[in-house]
Image (cartoon, rainbow, N blue to C red; front, side, top):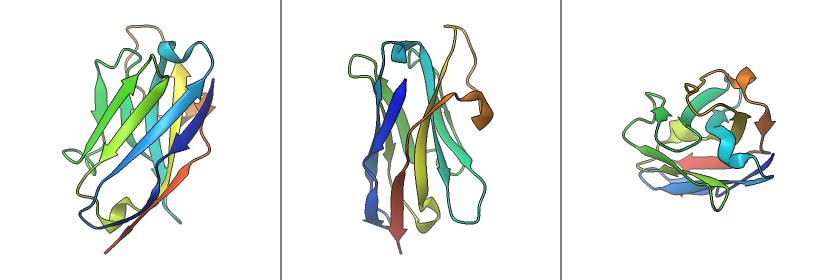
Length: 126
C-alpha cells in the first residue's frame, strides 16, 4: 500500500482544512488508518485513527470536538476534517496504515503502522 497525503496549507486561526490520504494497492480496505502530526522540535503525535470498516474512530484530546476522520474505501481515501483550527495545530501531517483483522482494536503506536505517506504541511496563523 502506498499513501499520499493532500490538502495541507496555510489557514487562519478559526479556519478549517480537509486533509486527504489516498492509497494505491488492493488491500487498503483491510487497513486501519491514522493521521499523525509532528511539529518542529516536538514528538510525533497521533491525531486521529479509524478502523478498516470505519465504525470505530479515535481522536486525541487536543483535537476532540474539532476533527472528524472518515473514509471511503471505494475511493481508497481517508479524510481528516479539521475545524476551528489554532496555531498549535501547525505541523506536518502524515497518514499511516496497517493491515489488521476485522476485529482489531485501533493502535496508538506509530511503530505499529507499516505504510506511511509523505506528509503535508499545515500552518495556522494567529
